[in-house]
Length: 273
Image (cartoon, rainbow, N blue to C red; front, side):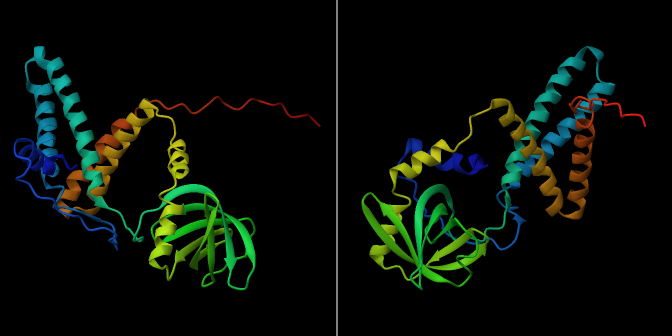
């Protein structure tokens, strides 16, 4: 998706590394509503239109072109379909999803403890964390409710640290905590107990599923198709009609692919009265 935009500055930097300049992108922004970034997707929409013309012209050549060129046209149409799939994935990326968190969460499973303001102490499991909050799982329901305050106890080696929190959400044993009133040193200690732990990233890497190329190919194809569906949802009425017709044609073609539905249920004769 970014290749169109980074090609020029990277080429300039290749021949003259001191000519370019570095811009820091904004971090921690919120996205209130789902929308399409029409500015960043303009070059890809242009390529989509070109490939649509290619499909139309290929169909015309299949009917009215020389018969000896049919196989060549079919091969060209396959490549155009491949281009459309990749472009669909690029278009799908331009759909900005709603972002309601200031910081991204890292999923993990680490032992922790909760010290409530009334002095009660409970063991828990740290399920995810970010720069300003964590998600924990209690061993019993109803131990914390929204608005409760206390301290999150985390270990880093033999040292134990306490970080003040406020409960922002509670769904059974799933609790969301917001770190509040952290001093500079407490913030440093919190980062060291979460992001800076070597075992944290080792466990995080172990959680990745094994790579399956065929499933990945299917995911790419599905992403490309969803990209056009999303564009149809947010496009102007005229363009929306074109996308709807295109995606409907693809869905109609896909419907002819055989599907495995499993063996029929075994017949078990009922006892006669």
